[in-house]
Length: 114
Ligand code: AMP
Image (tube, rainbow, N blue to C red; front, side):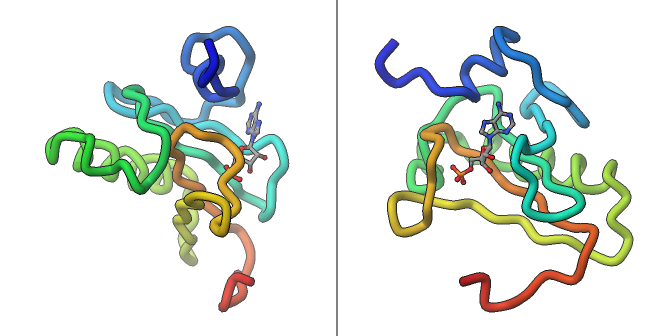
């Protein structure tokens, strides 16, 4: 499968992931190369390659995806806050062509992000 990604394999259960939250719309698991004490990636169960294709979701599914990101973040207990990031395309340093939200927290984050 030419456009198969590591996240497709995780969704299919072909490779392991440290899953922290799951519902009917999303799967959330710890990033293998964490950039903060808490770093979780949230993917929709319906594949879309990137944030720039978000309009390919129905409004209902996009809403359930965002709600899933919020539910995953709530489960992580980041009482002092967190950041949600979508890297998109080359300049955004997207490396996996399966839309994913990064939840980063557990320390004071800097801005601008660089
Ligand atoms: P991005 O650079 O925005 O495309 O983010 C892709 C993220 O996926 C990176 O932060 C990687 O560390 C993470 N990643 C790659 N492979 C895995 C894996 N097998 N399990 C968990 N996270 C992964």
